[in-house]
Structure formats: C-alpha cells, structure tokens
Image (cartoon, rainbow, N blue to C red; front, side, top):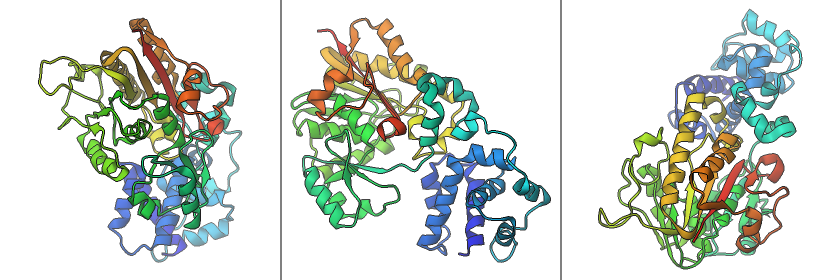
Length: 445
C-alpha cells in the first residue's frame, strides 16, 4: 500500500467503526481479514494511525473544526509536521488514496489553532465527565489524562505454579524482548509497548505467563487468597484474576468462578489447563439472573441471590474470600481501549453503577463471618469506586474497610506505591499502570 492508500484505509476504518460496538483492535483485525492485500507493515501503520485518532480525537476535532474521519486523519498528518504541499500530494485522489482536499479542509489546515484548548480537549475526555474526573484527580487532572493518551506497556504475570520470574525474564530477554520486572507486583514482567508475538511463544503456550496489567495483578493479590480457602470470583470474565488467585493459593482449596457471559467464561477452562490450575470450577452453564452479571444493565434484572449449591434450595454458599471485579466504565483502561472514552454515556454510567451496587449486595451474601469481600474496578470515577463503598458500608455495618497498607506486607511484600490509603488507587501517571481501584472489606465474625 502507498502512504496515500494507508490514509484512505484509516479513514474507511474510522467511518465503519463509528457504527460498530466491537473493541477497536478486534474491529481492525476483522477489517483486514477481509482485505488480504495489506501486508504486515501496512496493517501496523494503519492500525497505529486509527488508534492515534481514537486517543487524540478531541484535540484533532478541535484543531480541524470537524469530527469527520477525513478531518481527524488530516489532523494526524498535521501533527506529524507535514506542510500543505505534502498533504496535497497525499490527498491527490490518485490510485487508492483519498480524494483531493476541499476548500474547507484547506482552510482548516492553514488556520491557526483558535485559542488555548479547553482541558477536556487537551486531556482527551468527554466534557460531561469533567466534574467526576476533577473530584478523583484534583490538580493532577490534565497530567493524568495526558498519561492516559499514551500507549500502554505490555504486562505479564508469571504463573508461579510453573515458573519463577527470574527464569522467565532471562528467557524473554534471550528471545529479544526488552523485559523488566514490574515495580509493585512480585510476579509481574513489563515489556515496552509495541512488542508482538508473545502469545505465540513457547513460554506462553506452556503456561509460564499470562498477559495481565500490573494493577490487575495487585488487585488479585490484595484479595489475599491463601491455600485451602474457598474463594468466589463473582464476575470472573475470562478468569484472569481467578488464575492469579489460584497461584497464590498454590493450587490448594477451591475457586468458584461465575459470569453471566458464558462465552468469556468458557475461555477459563483452556487457560486453567495451560497454567496447570485444577481448583477452579465454573457453574455450568452460567444462567441469566444468576452468577456474575458482567454486562447487566440494572439490578432489577437479577432479583435472585446467587445459589451455587449442586441442588436448588440448599441455600447460599459462603466463602472465605469473595471478589467482585465489577463491570465499569473502563476509564482506567483508556490507554488500551481509547474508544471507550467516546462510547461512555451518562445513561450507561448510571446503569453500570446500579449493577455494581447489586454485585456488592450479592457478594456480601456469600462472604462468611470473618471473611473478606474485595471490590475492584478499572475505573477512576468516584461514583463507581469510593461512593459505592461508602453506600455499601452504610447498608452493611457488619463490614469494615481493611486498608490495603495492612494487607500489602503479607499479600504482596514489595514496597507499596506512595499515597496508599483506605483503598488501592492506581493510574498511569502515579503507578505506571492502568487506572484501577480496589477496596477490601472484612465481615465481622
């Protein structure tokens, strides 16, 4: 593909993507599967430009005074420092390249930026979220949001049932990866953004590691699941945290992983077998209205308590540890999924908050006296995090907050991040990870 053809491909992808609900990486992968003429370098270049648009869409639209896919792609070319003649050459209409520039586009290119960009433009977030983000981040709002526009590193979690971190580091480096230990997770490895082929390595196929952001690893470690315990992963998704907890339990005890999305949950069997994990069981099949509720819209959709006993009517099972890894806005994952910032709406956020509250209630029912309930989100928003916990404690005075600093020495053992308070709160700028929130709640014996 010529440089012009790559630009047109990016425009076409962005145009079609606006009508899709798929994650951006999956949509782009499927788009290229239908167009076999594109080589690997073409796919990489087009993909990077599309993600550049998704990360910086607010600024590009402000600069070009248009949200059209063409205008946004032109904006990325401008950011690369090309002059007007070079841009004309790329937009010549020849071959498979984009048609010539319009008068409005030429005027947009030649005009100077109109004043100082507002915070939501420079920070790349929906303006309606500013009040929540400001409450969460305060004076650091803009710097934190800029950090969320950068490409994310690739974090791995070494499966201690099969390997140790030092050995995996040596082998990855021997294979040409710039691998370093993570700062906080004792089992994590970090590789710079852009590396590829990790899931094709023999190390991955043998179960030596899983791909998992360091903050997500820390959330699983803070559950403090130990050998012989019974653990409930109430909204397990693909099971990444279940696998992490099985490792800290030395594959001794029992983990019950539930999720209303049976497709995601089915991945767990293969992943567990690869990792050598045998203590995870999944109710089969997950049923609507029972189990984890990833993707639910309101608490009213799930009126019944989760019953995991083999026979109906035997009552609700109790667990030493319950993890509610709740569906959320995903504001903390914007580096990896930049499209989420433009898909979130006030109605969607309100729906998610209702689901989170319902999940906490269901988790409380399954936490035995003396046990712990962990609540985690990949969100930065107070309404999904601290405010959920505050409301839960008001409803359930039998639960108390366990500060992560009290759990950290025994469960993790590394030097904790600065500012650790009643909750674990992570962000790209503060901890070098995805944005994440974890609360640990103890039920009185």
